[in-house]
Length: 293
Figure 1 (spheres, helix red, strand yellow):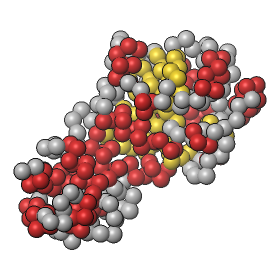
Figure 2 (cartoon, one colour; figure 1 turned 180 degrees about the vertical axis):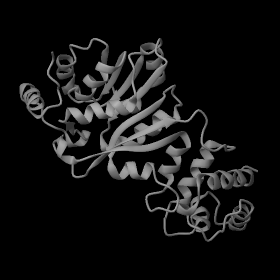
Figure 3 (cartoon, one colour; figure 1 turned 90 degrees about the horizontal axis):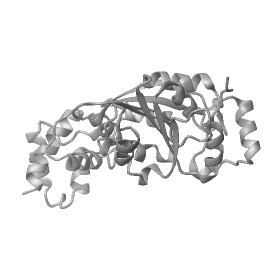
Figure 4 (cartoon, rainbow, N blue to C red; figure 1 turned 45 degrees about the vertical axis):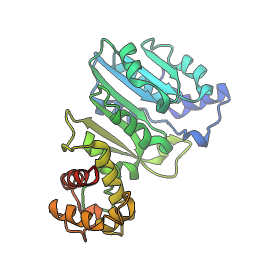
């Protein structure tokens, strides 16, 4: 029986053997608690017929747990120094493949067609580097890949923003963007003490179940996201002031923006954080009609 990678002693032995030093610029924090890793995989609800994509496998601690529960794992690793380590640690799992590439530059759709062509149930499961959490999640969602969902560990504060409800200080354009595509649920809080090196903040595991259709129907998706971002540009400003200053030609079209807000049933004095995703959808459709003439 192979010893689990994610124990303090085994992790230290592997790192020492290869003389590996952590790169802060790559946000490398390795988990050294097997129970937490198994819990993460539990929340992904994988079967022997499932496929898993991982980002930033490190020395293979999560990859190993995914490989034990799924038909195939493909992990993207950007740090060349980890490739020989992964070759050794993942040797017992021939159905786990490592691709040396930046996921943000990768053609993931093409990879899925090649590596997962016989697998219908696919999840992205990862302990994401904090500094690229949002770009990675948004890339996966915007490309509308055929995934069932995403289970990722990220900074607790980001998890709270992703799952935030209107009227809270955490709620913003990120909440709306991710809730447009998915149903988010924070499933675990993870203390900083179970990582090496220890990060400065606690982490959380969030599960994003991908919706079959977006949570609201809009005339133009890009414009809808532009409106939500503009509405939160300066949180203390009213939605009218934010839209007037952020939209191209907004200052000259202030009267039209007021008319659009009234048509959508939204008081111009409200702030972005008070609007539901449905209200943003209605407003964006009215403004789109006005601004695209």
